[in-house]
Amino acid sequence: MHEAPADAATLLDWGVAAVALPGEAESGDLHLVRSVGGGVLVAVVDGLGHGAEAATAARLAIAALARHAHESPPSLFERTHQALKGTRGVVMSLAFFKRTDPSLTWLGVGNVEGLLVHAVDAARAARARKSLVTRGGIVGSELPRLQAEVLRLTAGDTLIFATDGIREGFVDGLPAGATPQQQAEHILARHGKGTDDALVLVARYRGQSRTGR
Picture (tube, rainbow, N blue to C red):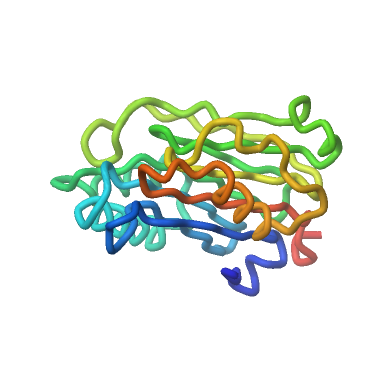
């Protein structure tokens, strides 16, 4: 179980499940959950390829995101892009949950898939999901024009980020009533390809924090 920082946990319940490609000592798929004054930043990065060089690029990306977590999503991509010059680079998706407004801002470059599943229709998730539209490119070498999207939230809405080590359709058949950690483990166990590093992060929105009311 991966525990969120206490102040992040007032806004989100979250869990993560990850595995390295068999035979590799470390994974190039990493995540960050970081609380800042205005809300909580959630990010997943995937270093290109696998092995030590992919893991190095992913660690540098996470470090850059952590240093600048208070900045806007487009600025975070710019910061990370500069930090990764000369590396393999990464693809990544991130979301920022605001404390005082029921919304998230998300943005992605490359093929880290993002889905928002609305709690109001969780039993019919196919009708109640929103997909992150990512831009083609590589953070560190080929950064495209960036435009973040803002989505409104209600308590119980669930964000899922998954790297390309997870097969498509992973949201189908998620166990109802499961915790975010249980859902992340379910997705990895049933939809992991086994031919690449893989990571799934599930974050459920609790609602506006008390300090923001």
